[in-house]
Length: 319
Image: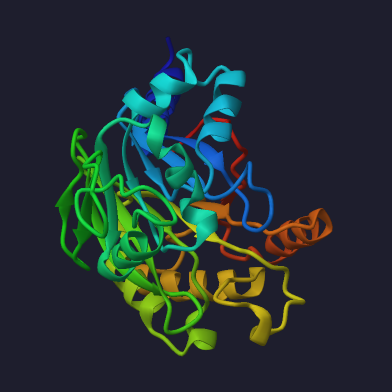
């Protein structure tokens, strides 16, 4: 073999090794149980997330549960019964805010569920106790609150910015406040497993419209994780196309505001750090023509080169 060929082979091996090191193995698996905002009661915000190759799922919001599990079984994501997924696979619920399109699945399915923990920040938990699980609108399946608590669910209040272990999993969570029709408060959940993270945002308006710094504060907190390539993806809502006037956003984002906020994040994390980064777009509101327009606008405005993912109900993907 000639010296030239030997050098060429060495260069190919070095390049191949460097390339393989850049390929990051997935850390989480996600099964969307509901992906839309608005009027489709069979497909409202709820995302099951678990460490890769496990069935230790948590539900990030809980607008649709049963119908989403059935869809996932239909897609052969789960090979057990709907009841088994509900009772055995879902280890807990994380409620970003108490609007019905984010909690109705949890409420309706509670009689058939098993004992587990419901996590929320203080204001959200108070609304859950006082308005839903209150022995009037619904039986109190919690362990605190009005009426006679049935103690099926443990209601755990999350302190903002405090890392909390997630019961019956290897994961932890840290909660951050969001503004959703100021001063109504929503929540972002930063989930950690080992040295890998995933970030889920409940409903949120842009800082400029909400007169808030919540999103910038959140971006500041996660920027080091972006730099270190430990954050595997961000779930973030985009509810309306750009034509929606600011006064009718009602605490939601448009493609224009999404990209403005991501530019703030890139400024904090470093130029080019978001290229290829996974952005999971949630809470798209019908009608269909608005969703088509919204997707086209995001595509045209994506000057950061982020990887846009539109989750589909009952179809597993990895982060």
